[in-house]
Length: 225
Ligand SMILES: *[C@@H]1O[C@H](CO)[C@@H](O)[C@H](O)[C@H]1NC(C)=O
Ligand SMILES: *[C@@H]1O[C@H](CO)[C@@H](O)[C@H](O)[C@H]1NC(C)=O
Image (cartoon, rainbow, N blue to C red; front, side):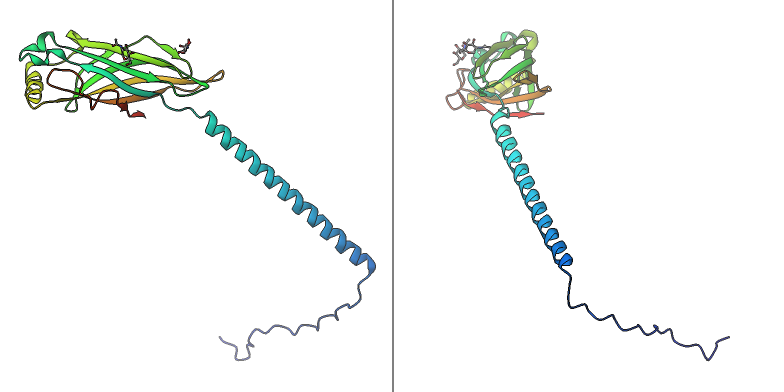
């Protein structure tokens, strides 16, 4: 049942606030002064700390910029498939290649743990071969990667060969040469983890089976996977 005498909730009247003290003691002011001094000191310490942090960050960034390894640079120097002038040349065909790999770093060496070269035509592999033994490339050194694909390392059948011959009659056959290496960077005495690196070279040959001037000595884009 409702009580008709239920009163709405009301706050009890507050006692009036005590009068503000107008006069503060000398001790109070001394305390205030000490406090503001402490605040200034801690603000200063904070600024110094932030500045040092910023300085360390800058130094680390500059060190990183100057020490960070640059990827090796690849250029295709030569590429040829002499048998292309023969309509039935695929049985004893040979592809010759010459690529240079340069380590552009001044203080970082590169270990090539394994390297292989593959040749592509129309996004299909037409041959692959391992090249070089594992080797170390010092700073600012260039290594020549050359060799040839023939016999078992060349997987070209008559049908594919006829495509080459037909392209050749148009003036050019477009191949791609890919160098895949597993490398590690050597920074001082520390070795990085292994990276798989790919260099993709355009290798277009003319009707004599030699590399065209437009492809010769071109830089090959490099990416990691
Ligand atoms: C490969 O190319 C480099 C640079 O052009 C050259 O010095 C070297 O003699 C070439 N190697 C072969 C086997 O042709
Ligand atoms: C790097 O190249 C320089 C000069 O081209 C040569 O003297 C040096 O022996 C090479 N270092 C390595 C590790 O191949």
